[in-house]
Image (cartoon, rainbow, N blue to C red):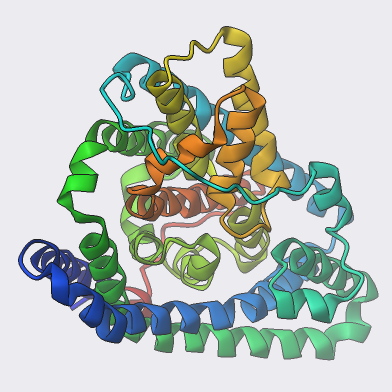
Length: 413
């Protein structure tokens, strides 16, 4: 049985068990959740997170060192950033347009007690200045991914410029990469159990009443996520990457399933890189550069949530947003996707920034908190798919040929 199928079985069982506890045994849920579901999910997520920093370091060093030409490195970086900004803008336009059409906030909602304390997001300029780490080891320990990425790119660039003198160091990093990929494969054997625990916790804690009350809002977010994946990413893969979109989705699906379970682009990074390199044969130099960067700053799925949530909250409060305010939402959310990349709880912090920019109450975020965990799973899967689509486009634009080689059994089996 393939790994993807095992994970899907685990997720399906988690949904069934979560519903059983929520509907038939709500009193026992907290106990079972604390001793079974949460530990299973936490062990799996921690195992993957344990590998994230070392994999980002070795992948980016190898990727940057493999692009020995500084002009080529700058060209790939420019293509990557442009792709992320453009697709984020498209995602927001789709989200706002669909929310205005469907009007998910047109019903009657309970606003009493809608309290949310937003964490303070750092200014964009401060985030940009802090990209260069004063203490690289400290950045690794703290998991400051933008700083880790910058340090790894600088080291890779240095190795590329030194050339033959760094041949031994390159060999060492390549061996470290092989070890990391083996550990990813080993950790993934626990994925079905982790998926079961994570889904059971999400379904069991949310309940059908909370989901039904926000059904219209959830429908709009999920529909736009699907629309963005099919139209935007499908077009990018087909037109720019010269690859069949159906083949792309099929071969990349193992990583999408893990992203759905963990709700973390960073935690899914080891699996998404391995899947793209082995299944679709995108080079390690492109994948190792584009995907870690995308996991940190590319958040199309989160941007969609922000666009729909902003219109939803405006409709609930009876506020009319003019064209200028809608453009402000698009601009703020697009820039914030980079500016707040390293902040925990980034989705809600970014949403609070967007609401503030158009004069809507930040406390209203409490209206969407109840179903945010479930939507977070879906938008994370979209986020990492965007990273992969960008890598396919960049690889093709750099003259790579891929997708014709048979899939390696050890990834999908």
